[in-house]
Image (cartoon, rainbow, N blue to C red):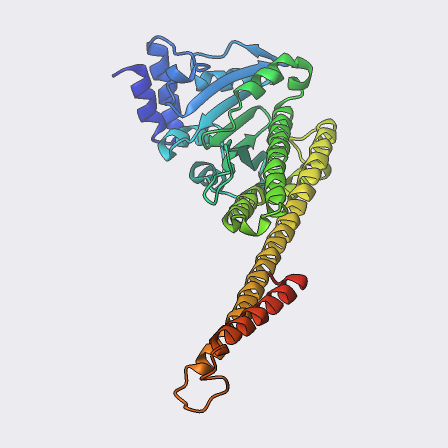
Length: 375
């Protein structure tokens, strides 16, 4: 069996003894570069594993256990481990190595959590909802506008573990930006947590700007000349997609507020100032989403009012034409009765006179309805 196979088997046990066995197995064979996800012995869920000291990458150990031990012995720096949709077996050994709380581990593996912030001893566990805008040529009643995912972050004194769920929200570019700013990265795991929060909220800003364009288009269509013929399904679909965005944005306000104001052991006071900036951006997005919701309600009400007005106009036209047609119907019905003694029944000019009276009455009614805007 290959080293990767041995390590996968051992980490699936989820015990500290298993991790020690991982280290022994690793010493017997050629080492695998943990920083390359395709060759990671911890399984395909591992995207990256890098050690940092003073804001710069440092050579890691021959395996994850040795890397963590080296960082802890030096009492400097931290390890950033990135995972993507790990299974229980893939995460069990990692949870034991970093002494993660079982409830937090369960949330990280199962996903579908609300944005939140929890503290388990000296470890901080944060959940962020990621969003991305789904490009579409034209908004329809079935268009997907917002796609969501999740990022869970474990933060300790010497480690950061990120667990990502979903097809978007990759942290690779963010890692590169942080590595380019060694001064900020040197501030430790809290700086990584701030960068992730800031990255997520920035995505909220971009998505809300794109949703604004869809709302503007729907608004223009509704208030166009034939706005009553607009598709109400598009408005409902946009409201549903906006609800997905709202579920991601609104619950995050309280965790970010705690990170920026409440004293937390792993968050230095200088980092809290950065979280206050994130909180300001998040507040702007929250207000914008609330405004979108109210605007869509107004657009929907305006559309329904236009439909009602259009229906009333149609009913007026139908009623006017029914009144015009009622004149010849009444006269013809009257003269269709089988009576012998009726006015002008045997007169030579009776028929053309009746036709003329009917035509004149219909013209008068038609002109009156046109003058009043019914036709």
